[in-house]
Structures are given as structure tokens and as C-alpha cells.
Image 1 (tube, helix red, strand yellow):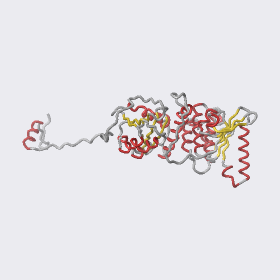
Image 2 (cartoon, rainbow, N blue to C red):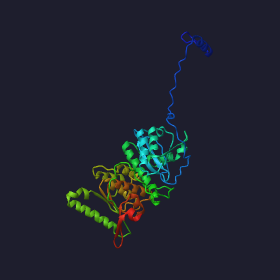
Image 3 (cartoon, one colour):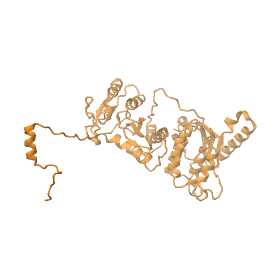
Image 4 (cartoon, rainbow, N blue to C red):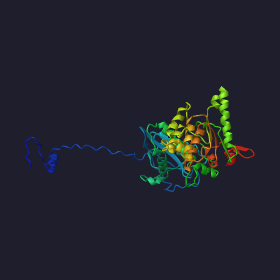
Length: 422
């Protein structure tokens, strides 16, 4: 044992230290450890019973509404989406996106969903035991509108598996495998809204017979009711689909419209904005040999008309979904379906008020047809006019209720989708 000198402090055993402390009365100073973070804030209110008991089946719309809040960090900000899901067919009844789980998100989300209910409908609102579902405002809203409250047991995630499982789908299909750098919160909000619109209207599911929730309800004669809350109405458009057999004159009709519009716009300056402001995508469009897709997009972007483009977020998401992996390839070496994807994207990039599209879905594989329809629907909902020749009659109903002109050998028939072709 090393020898101790006079500068070393005295060393005593624990028993000696305790005997001295017992006689003299000193108290030890104990440093408290920092308290671990806990999301549990106690019991702010009485929790209702779990009425669902992991049986998430619903025999009719607006019977069972599970909900949850997700959280993730983006490029310099956090986002918390909160949806309400109808377990009848998986439709997103309402959704809110917030930077924090505040009262505006917690109370606004059920109010948006309640606005879609018909008189007498009182669905069961099922959630976990989060504090925002036990706020006085949340409880008051449900009591005023007759919603039945149901909560999962504490610490049991499978009790709310329907809502948590839904939140995993946008995470896999929309959030992952994309570069979100420099994407602002407002841009992300717009892209998420566009994805959820696609989820409700055009994304097919196996359970309702390879149909989207909206398509499934239409097949049953059930119409998805729009929200009754005061909001900005969708922009009106006068879009038209031209259908018919081969050789009926569909392409000739579209070429005539494009030629007449160009001639009329160049002759009368007073109507230039309404007539000349159009883009035409012919059926067999050609481009310079040796030009890559990225260079082609740059050329179209240079011709883009200035002004607001309400569907810009959907257009950018379409590029990420369908054109990733094609941008460094030569356009002349692409397949027919790949060319249609690129040409449709470039045409809609021009930001015109009217688009004449000659069979943009021709040769496109089924997985990308859905993305194309989603994009064209967003352009129409933004108030732009789309005149489109197509053989994909089954996709017309996914574009809302446009006018349809059916060319025949002896003439034509015209009407609206829901009036004649439903």
C-alpha cells in the first residue's frame, strides 16, 4: 500500500462516518437526478371505456371513426398530421396538419369531420388516451354533436391499430424515399393534401374490390358528402373528354380546335389571354434527338407562363413519383409510355389556362395511369380547362364530372359523366 503524506485527506470507513454524523447531526447534500421526460400528463379527465375492443369493422359509412396524431421532423420544422378515418371503406373524412398538437388542430379536426354528417348520424369516435383527446373542448364538441366517445386502454397501441396503421401508409407511399430538403411547411401541406385527395379518389384498395373509397361508394349508390362548413368553393372549369372508336375523328377534332384557337388568338388581340393561352399535346409528339429528359424539362420551364400555379405541388410530386430515374436518359430512347409521362408533365408545366391533350394515357402502365389521372384532376380542380382524347373510359369518372363527347360513325353524343355514363 503506498504511503500517504500530510497533504492527503484523511480516509475513514463508512461506519466511522455514520457514527460522527449521528453524534454531530450533519446532513448529506444529495444532488437530484434530472427527471426523465414523460409524455404522460396524468389523468386530466375521466377516460371512457373501449367500446371498439379491436373490432374495427363498420357495416355502413359514419359508424366508426378512429383517429390519431403522428409526429415527425422535416427540414427545420416538425409536422403533426391528424386524420379521421371512416372504417367502412378507409376514407379520410377530415385531416389537419399542425406544427404542434395544439387546440386548433385537436378541435378543428373533429369539426371538419362532423360537417360531413347527415342529420341523425352519430359515429363512434375512437382514439388513444392522448391528452388532446381529453381536453374540455374535445369533450364538449363530441357532446354537442352526439358523437360516442371510445378510448383504447393505457399503453396498448393495438387498441387503436386502425388509425396507426393508416398513418403508416402515407409514411411509406408519400414521405419515404423522397428528398424533402428545402421544402417549406406550406409546400409540404399542399403536397400532403394532394396525396390524401388521391388516396380517397383514385388510389385503389384490395378490400373494396380494387376500388378507391370514392369509387366504392359510387358503386353502392352512396355519394361522399362534401363538407358543409364555409370554405372557398373549388374553381369552376369547363373540361371535356372526347371518346370514340378508332377512326371516329377524335384526333382530327382536337387538331382543329388547336388550329382554330391559334389562328383566332393571333387575329384578335382582345381575346388573346382566353384563346391563345393554351398548350397542345399531340398524339405523336417528337423532340430533338439527343436531348435528355432533364434538358427537355428545362426548356419547357423556360416557356412557363408567369403567375400562380395552384397545382404546382401535385406536379412536383408527380415528377418525384414517375420521372425519377428517367431524367438523365435521352428522350428518344424512352418507351412510348415513358414518353407520355414526360410529355404530359412538360405540357402541364407551361402553366396555361387551357390544355388540349391527345391520348396522354396511351401506353402508360396501370400503376402510372393512376398518377396521371390524379395530376389531370388536380389541374382541373385548379380551374384550368382540359380537353382530352382518351380510350380509358373507366378513368373518366375519376376526373370529377366533366363533359363527355362520344364520336360515332354517324355523329356524336354529349352529356355529363354522372348523367349518361354512370
